[in-house]
Length: 152
Image (cartoon, rainbow, N blue to C red; front, side, top):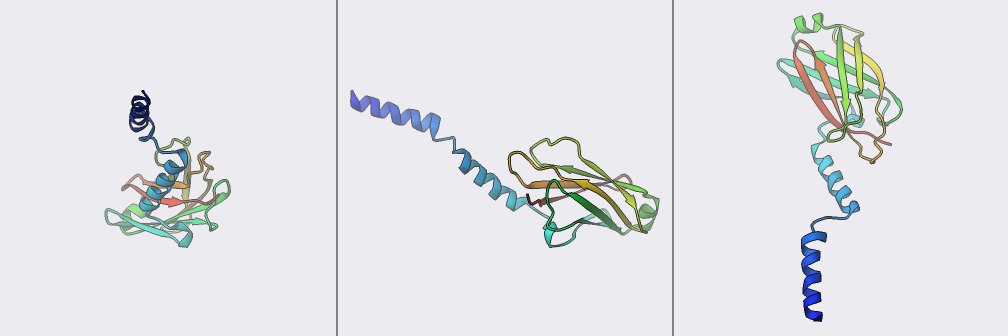
């Protein structure tokens, strides 16, 4: 009888309990995956991507970039002069990949021939996740996204 109970216990463990890692293990895996997809080390300086024939440079200050602090966002466009000269406002959409944190758009106004800036706040995620995505929306060209970590 003990043998049957032991086998039954192992089967229950293998089928129902083992497939679910502990919360701590799950967080470690998620953090490790997040590290792999970061494509902008914003604390080290501006990040750059290309959309069409235009280079989009994103910078956030002060550094280190922290949640729940007022931040200055700057986007510089290098490329097609006609698109740059016709653009008056750029939208910067801040979102957390995989988790809805509410709408958080920063309007960046022109403050130079190819430079746009504005102020905003990145909220602190209750789960402790630090990965954020800034999507620069340029009406005439499309969107480009930057994935970066914030400090708490």
